[in-house]
Image (cartoon, rainbow, N blue to C red; front, side, top):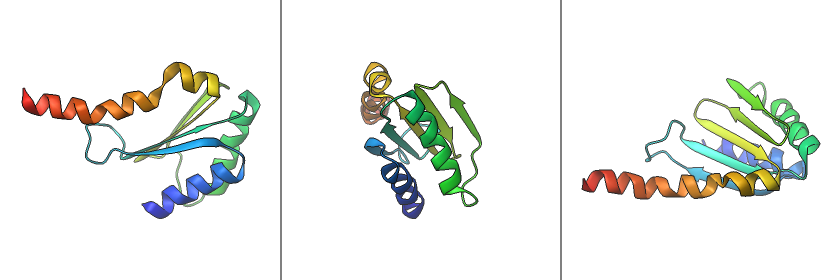
Length: 112
């Protein structure tokens, strides 16, 4: 798994993605094991990064689906979800804060 994550990070980093973060959610109540978030420098760069990921990760990785809006792209690899978004979208939606609360949510449910 770590080799797969490293390859994704390498493709993003090589192609000028910024602020790449990896969230290990294996022990959390979430639908994927890992989430990778990266910032692009603009809408066109966001789209280009998806193309780089598709070319750089195939044939080893199968893209089960992608959701593309220009400012934000989500790529589903089954057990890994990749979000690439412009800094404005990343700030607005703040997925990192949501993912960070999963620990607290699981603990709260166990205490109840």
